[in-house]
Image (cartoon, rainbow, N blue to C red; front, side, top):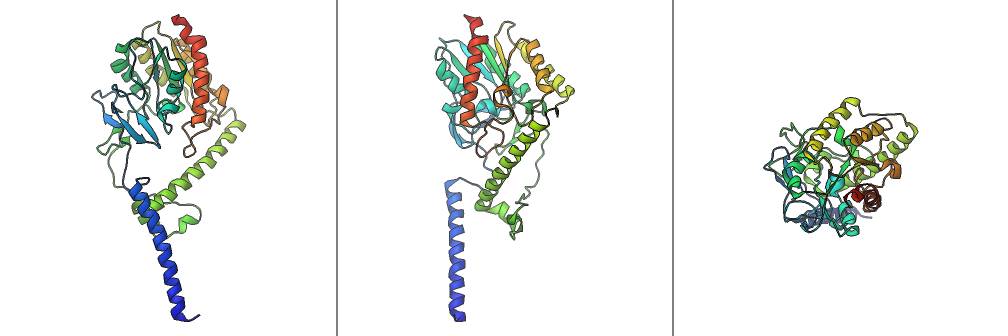
Length: 340
């Protein structure tokens, strides 16, 4: 092959590659599937109550976390309350909120479909801890006169008691966060770590960011499975301290003092990769001493409840459906009958 022909063929090859990846880059940017700039979900607003800090926007329907999130006039991810029906309230964080699943796939939506004689209200929001859940109950829920209450607990609730803030870009930031220069976090493993200009790509390429998300999700799933198996073998390992549990108990006391003494209440322990063999019975006792019926979902799922395909924490639609069935059975057996 002549040098001229070789040069032409190589040029065509590089042009084809450039057009291919350039086309993907443009498609990702135009579609909004991937953004090179911060693109937080448009579902939050700052709360006038500093103890709540931020909340869901009322009367909103937005695409967020790969799902449609619809709120009522109170700013909760539920239908409007029917004043002629008794009210069942759920407190929680992103698990209860239904992170990554559509409105009709959340735990509360599934339970509402099974007990139409009740109004079921999902007051949860991603990032809420017990301090914020208590503030929501005091400021928004108590006046609605709920007839029963469900609190869904995840062990990250005893890891961080700080209240997150919504910054000016609409991004949730941990307590004490200070603005800093954006830094690149390119892929540092596998063959992709050798790509030249990876830091620039991480800051400017939608295609690179999409690849990074895919790789991170795949590695995260692999790591989760390894940790689940390791925790099953090391059943005595515990990473929750008594100090953290007692601090949580003190915040739970604040919530309970705000509630009517005879309010039926259910405390749900949501499973994660750690088995928490020592903390779980202590936590259950803390809740029971404060009048809660306790449902430990580790007894159903172990430490390997199915999560979203692109996430290692939040339940899949299948897991949410299974959990809703078990929660409903517990409610009908141990909580709601006290109201009859």
